[in-house]
Image (cartoon, rainbow, N blue to C red; front, side, top):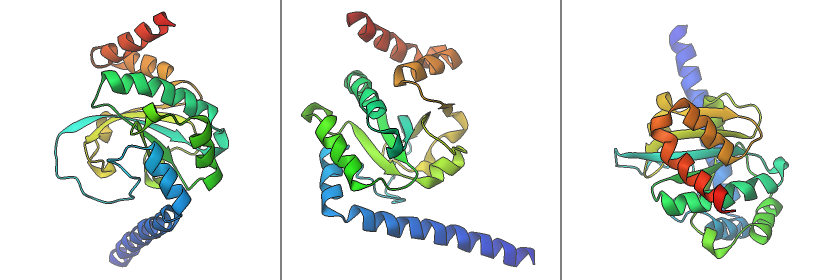
Length: 201
């Protein structure tokens, strides 16, 4: 009985992942969505779902911003505006906007019209990844996660045990304050840089 139960669980997980992958491929085949994503996200990570292409073991820092189109675009605009100088200063820092499902096309059209600038090209990657929501037990957004993952992203290879999760509607700047309070040695350089930006305003 237990053997059949295990087989059933494995099969259901496989079918779930397959259905998500099929849905994602169909979604990304929409020519307008595909063009917008190519324009505004990191070229090296084109929102491919569960494609295991990483062969590297070195891990780099990632900021995951768990988001929903129901939040509108203002919080995303604020996120991107701070992500830009951080990326210029810390080249290996990666920014992912993570959705549970697939936003309507109109959401990305708004992003392109109201947020996108040429300087933001290749800055962020949009990820459609319900398994990440499940892993971090997120039933609402927004939320932030800092984790170290392979250069060519694979969630199952991220160092999730030493990741940092913060739930709540606050800015990326505040998230770095939270990170600093938890690990001053690792996050001092980021917070010092951001505070320097604030002083220049």
